[in-house]
Structures are given as C-alpha cells and as structure tokens.
Image (cartoon, rainbow, N blue to C red; front, side):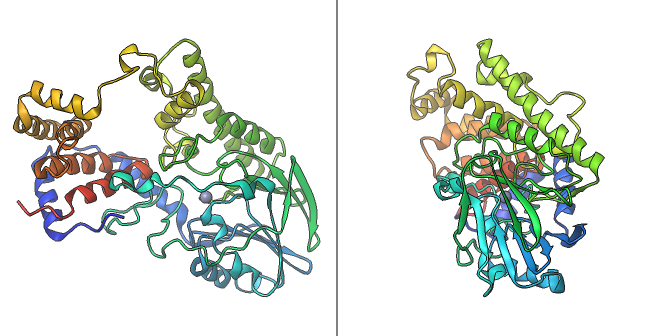
Length: 446
Ligand SMILES: [Zn+2]
C-alpha cells in the first residue's frame, strides 16, 4: 500500500502543476463530485415495511419488516458500518431477524452479517455458486495504484464511484462475516419468511453468483450490483475475469419482465415509481447491450481493440443517461475486456506476435528521441501542452530501465495527477492518484 504524500512531495507536485497550462477541463471531476450525493446518509422508505440504508457503508442494506421479525438484504462492509445501520434503522428493525440474503459474495455485502444476526440465528440465503466465488486476484495494488483510493489524502479523494468509500476509514475485515446456511441451485427459489413472500432469482452479472431479490406483493426489486447509477463494471482493472456481459444483459431482461415498481440497488439510491423503474432498467439494459453488440460486430469485421474503442459508444439517445455515466465501469475497458475474452490476447498485428521486450523498446525509443535528458525535456513540453498521456508515456521510456529516476518519476506523477483531475471515472481517478503518490514517495524536494 502506498503511503501518503509527504509535504515536500506535495509542494513539489503543486509547483510543477502551477507551471502547466491554465485552461483546464475539470468537468469530469465536477460530475464525479456531484455523484457523491448518491451516498448521502439516509434511511429511505421504499414501500410499506421496506427501508434501505444508503450511505452508511460501501453498500446499501435493505430492511424488510415481516409479521414476526425482519429480513435483511446485504449486510454492509464490516461490523462498524453494520452497527451504524442498526442504529439508523432503530425500532424499524423488528427482532428477531429471521433471514439474511446475500445478493452476492463481495466483501462489502457480506462483512456485517454477525451484527444483523445478533442472537437471532437467522437463515442466511445465497446462490449455491456463492461458495465457489473466488476472490479477485489482488492486482489492485500493483504499480502503486488502487482503484478505491484507500491511501489518498482526504483533499484528493472524492468517492469510489458507486460508494462513498471502501476501506478508507475502517480497514476491510471479515470479522462480521457469516457463511450462508441456505443455498439454492437453478433459476429461482420462492420462500415465505416472517409472512413475506420472497423470490430469489439467479441473475448472473457483476458476479457469477448474483441473485436478485423480488418482493412480488410490494413489487420491490433488489438487483444487487447488476444495476446502479453508473455504467456497469464489466471489465474490472483490479484483477477479475470479464463479467459475462451477455449473461448480464439476459439477467436485466429477466428483472425488467417483472415490471417492478421500486428498484433498490445495492449501491446508489433507489428508483421509485413504476414508470421510472421500467424506463431506467430498460435504458441500462439497452446501453450495455449496445456496447456488447457493437463490439462483437466489430470483432466479426476483424477490427482490433484500438479500432474498436475509437467508435464503440453509447447510442446518442442514451449517452447522457444518468445511470450510464462512467463513474464506475468504463466503456473503453469493457470493449477491450470483451475483445480479450472473445478473441484472446493477440490483436492480429503480426509485429506483435513475438514483440520486443518493453525494456528493449524503451532503450531504442530513448536513443531515437536523443537520450534520457531529451525524453524528460519532451515530457515536460507535453505536460505544458496538456498532452498528459503522452507525457506519462515518455516518462515510462525512462522508468522502464531506471525506475528510480527522480525527474521521470516527477514527470509521470504530474501527468497522472492531471489525467486524474479530468476523470469522471472514480476507479481511474483513484488509480492515477495513488500511482502518482507512490511515484513521489521518498523523492527529495527540488
Ligand atoms: Zn457491491
């Protein structure tokens, strides 16, 4: 984990940034700031006897009141967050808790179960694939980056896209986790819990073990992480496999066909009202489906990833839809992820069948440009010209063979910081900024 910026390093970075251009487009950052309103702490009544606690944890917790007890859907990140939610629910949480439902296995949905269970020994429901869920491979911290921005100073951190934060205040812990006691296979499980009819529907999407929770009487849908106010994270950068986008679209089809009147996602605020629920779920499905179809079409025509990302976009009618903005998942990452999944790692260019090593290529690039000093000079010029990705790439030509080169580290950190400040995508912002912080660590002041 990268450590916080030293004061000297911050001052050095600020001085460097001050020398760059003054005209800046920070509209992405401002949109991401506005997204934080989605995590304002509130217990929202969704329907008679159904409440959702938003903003108390990385994920929402839903309380369903029954005749002789309660049902809890998802359990927050950790016991500290779960206790805050129990307090916020107050007397609305009628003991005993008869059942807990996990929409999927991610830690921010399963880490507070012990607190909600108390001494009530509830049944704990999940899909049978829950047990087969594999943790992400742990690439999140490589190169000093981190999509959640856990080590960023408060002044730089905005949010984590679909959550206020994950693991920043309370380190992730599994102390509050309880394993499922009632799993099901196949497409659905219908049960009656505390007098409430509940249907659990197998809806793979963000994870292969995702279930949607459907209350047919109140017409409330809880789609887990298959739907929220941000483009879905189909191809995560953190070390997961592609999340099957065709299965995801089919799962959205399935929940749309229920005609819900209230949709309560596990992140961001609920959508209330039949018309809004159907329109929003449909737009979400159509947006994802269009990206998948355009990408597969292009692949069939023989297009390479760089060609695909140049033209695969949301349809104009959906481009500005508030639920399809790239606060969390990225369109370009989705396209590249689908390509790799469908076609493999090779982009079709024979030169890249057995390419030069990156060290070899960097040595030759540096020589072409006129030596290390020339590369740094051009990198600074690129920074001034607001050509930030190129500036970072020039720094890489030096860093590949000399990772300790102070000026190259400063150059790359400045370029990544500028890129971060223009991002609407929280994952990219947090990863850029924590990498920059890592690059400036232990550098002497200039
Ligand atoms: Zn989640």
